[in-house]
Every structure is written in structure tokens, then in C-alpha cells.
Image (cartoon, rainbow, N blue to C red):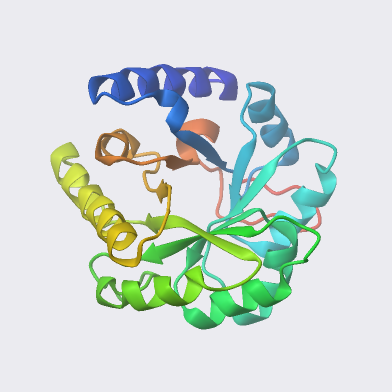
Length: 239
């Protein structure tokens, strides 16, 4: 199936799913997770109207951002952040979904160029405190949000999570609803105006929409199965 066909299928299912839970598909953005994908695949997705692209690896992303700078694309960093990468991430992206430490948020604020709009941030929550996943402990979320919401040159937009994998749609929904409840409680407790729930990937996004997601991070569903685990280097690699 072609990229355009996959995107059309996703869009129709998104419309139907949103309607079934009294939502509008227009309020839910699709982020095409393009890690490991060549520039040609990104151009094909863009041709269908996709303008938001998510990347996990800084070096790979910078190559694509430079090569595709003529296109009006919005770049989202969605991978774990090392301190020594914060400066470049702050300079090259419009969104960062994976903030889970005060130090990282402070570095992003410090290095965000003042001539650019505020950098949009989501706090990544480790809902089940899984040791192999990034994310702030839910019990420490309020403190982190308080700090981030006061930083200059960045804007706290919402929360992100990658819940434990579940095959049952109702269990997926229950997991996502936990993040939605944290989001609502945090907005109320700190009088914030967060508007973004970044949740839902290729295998569980329908449940995420039901639970209130406003941003879906879709890789396989758009680009198909990866051909290898090789990241892009100086030459176009396949994934």
C-alpha cells in the first residue's frame, strides 16, 4: 500500500472514531514519525497534506530539516534528550514531546533563539514507572510542570506518554485515560492552559482518540514496516 493510501485510510478512520465520541477530527493532529525514513517518503506524506513530522535522533533529523527546508514543515522532537543535544534541539525544532527533567527544560529555554517563537514543550510521563522508559514519575509531575511553566522562551503545551503495550482496546483506552486525568488535574491545580495530549501510536491510536488525544504519533501506520533498524547517516538509509 502506498503512503498516500495509508494516510487516506487513517484519516477516514480518524473521522469515524472522532465522530463516535463526539469529537472533531480537525482537533486531532497527525504527526508522521519519520525516523529512519528517506526524504522521498517525507515528501510523499507532505504531498497528502501532512506537515508535522516527528524525529527521535538529532543527527538524522538535522540532515532532513536542512534538506527539506524549502517545505513548510513543522518538526517535533519525540526521543529521549541528552544534555549535550539540548542546544541543537532548541534551535531546530518547533515542538519537543519528551521533556522529563528540570535540567533539560532549563537548557531548552536557555538555548532557544530569541528570534524564534517559544518552543512548545510536552512533559513525558512514565505512567507505570517502567525502568526501561523515559518519563517523569506521575508523583513528580506537578513539581516539574511548575518549573517548566515559568521558564522563558518555551511554552508548556501538554503531556506525552508511551503506556505499557496492550492488545486489548479497552485496556489501551484505560491507560490513555490515566494521562488525560493527569492532564486535567494539572491544568486545574496549577491554573495552566495546556491544550495538548500527545498520545497514541500506530497500534493503539484509536483508543487514544477515544481518551482525548490531540496529537497522534504515527510511523508504521503511515510509512509501513521498517526494512531495517539502521538509522540514516550521510547517505539515505532504510528503516
